[in-house]
Amino acid sequence: MENQRDLGRWDLAEVARRCAQETTRFFQGQDQDGRFCYELFRRALLERDDCAWELLYAQYRPLIAGWVKRHPSFPSSGEDNEYFVNRALEKFWTALPPKRFSRFPNLPALLRYLQMCVHSAIIDYVRRAERLAVCALDDIGRVGNPTNVTLEDEVLTSSYREEFWREIDQRLHSEKERHVVYGSFVLALKPREILARFSDIFRDIQEVYRTKENVLARLGRDHELQKLLEPDA
Amino acid sequence: MTSELSPEPTNQELLAYLDGEATPQVVEHINQCPYCRERAEQLARFQDLLTTRLYRAACPTTVELGDYCLGLLPEERASETARHVAECPHCARELAQLREYLATLAPHSEPTPLEQVKVLFAELVHGLRNAGRALQPAPAYALRGEASEPLLYQAGDAQISIEVQADTAHPGRRLLLGFVIGLPAAGLQACLTQQDQPIATVPVDELGNLTISNLAPGTYQLVLRSPTAEVHFPDLEIG
Image (tube, rainbow over all chains, first blue to last red; front, side, top):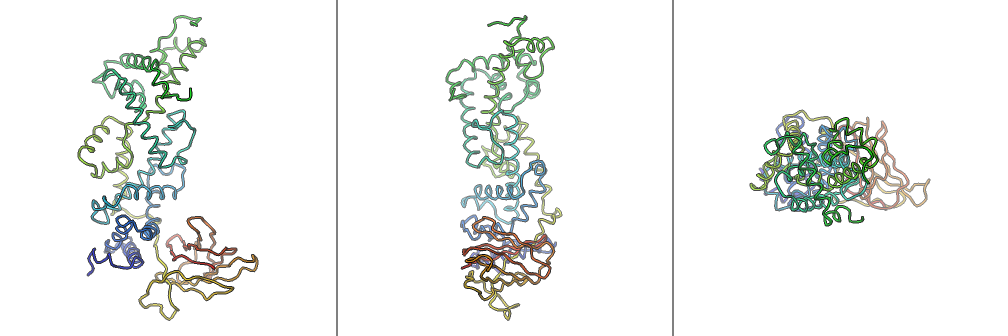
């Protein structure tokens, strides 16, 4: 009986064919051998074999599409199923470089991670839509929609936000100010929600508003910060 | 310029007004006072700028949250993420949603019809006499000339023949003809792409025939799709 190492010498087309066969057996409730599909994943992710990746895409596209359809946030996204299938696979590819493959010793572990990538792709979309709803403009000053933001945009704007938060944090004078700014603008909470969440920090709602008033007045007089906020002003 | 009305709301009261928490007196004053309305708008704009640049700035990416959920983060990063999730209602909600979602997709769950689509890879057969014997995969054959010999494929129990002819309705172009046996014709479509760009999607008729016309010479990818199966072919080179 072939072991996993022997499968590395098999012709790719035959590995793909056996993977398809075993997947059908799985859905028919029969005993199935996950080694062939695992080998397909291994060649695609560890060896970065393009042909193996294409076969993997073909084999798992219907399964991933089914997972997308089952996600509770998918129906309200208004987005095409195929869009999320492709985003999920992009994430899977990026999040599993060769050095990380050894952390997934079997097929169920890989499929679980792929399921997580489906969730991640959909929630990224939801996050962008929420951000557009919360913010008058999108992160870098353009009016946009969640679909048009690329992975590169996402990384760049995420880094920008983290950097900006560090700039603000340096200008805060107390834990109370930090909690008010963090709660108001990072978490987008109302003062009552800040009071509820940080009830050990603030006595009452007036203290939250007082702290917010003071810190906003000081930040509003900070010329360097104003330049960061509105570089074109 | 000062307000014509008094008392003028404090900045704290303006903040409460923007949060919908102001007293009726403050609301009335702002509605009647252009100066205080301008103050409120400036404060709102400043807060919007901060929110635009800070919203969820401290939140881990969705992949990182997923890694945390699956126990794949290094210990220190996992501790940081746990602390963040404890104070961030948005990440706490997303994590709970992920756990619930993974639980519904557990292996014992009933697969949906979409998940049960059987995927087959067509292999080139060297003549129908070889049907049923061990098949050796072969590279894509070029389909050239005014009328080429049909290529015969097998995919599971299905047999598919593909041939190319000159397309008389479009001089210089080709006509791809296919004949499918062993796959249910209901809902069966032939999808032709070229470097991920869709070229044509045509139905396979009840007799198993398919026709794709007006094709330029080149390399194409063909997939037969039905509600229950997909058949993927090696690259087709049409000359």
